[in-house]
Length: 112
Length: 113
Image (cartoon, rainbow over all chains, first blue to last red; front, side):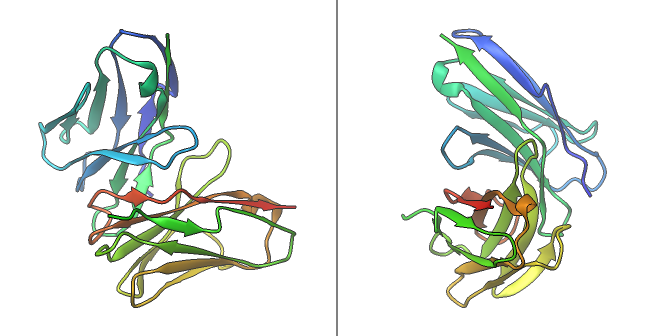
């Protein structure tokens, strides 16, 4: 079983502030890392799929970095808005096992 | 293009009954995965299908089963329902495997009484 840890479990951010949180994973046998955003009453939505050490991806005000050698990824939200309130999940496939293991998520609440 | 659809969206069953949930993937996607989410738990992997073959199964009892049809539509079945099976069941499709981004359906909320 792949151990995927996310921290913090939750955080509250003032509108306009920037924030970041972490996904940690075993650095051996790395294959890919996914970030998903899950808003209340909606389906999880893919943000990024990252495969290379040093990868940086960006979508609007959200960006992510990846360090496969030390086993972590950061997700950044710049200038948080209320619509950024969601649970952010990271997930990794267990090698070639066609099985995606999810972390417990970081729940972000943006206060207006 | 049309997204992933799941039916039914809500379901109430009693203990001991069985249930079948359906998932239609995005056109062209051949991999379908199923996940369970219960309160306080993250998404737990149930199984993954590709071209009608189950390629991996999560740590769930044999009461949980699934299949995939030639048009990539998938069903999952839970027999002899228990109260603990109450959960949100999500299916996700992707082009080829879990290394590709997953497109999630809206989920089926199952309540077992």
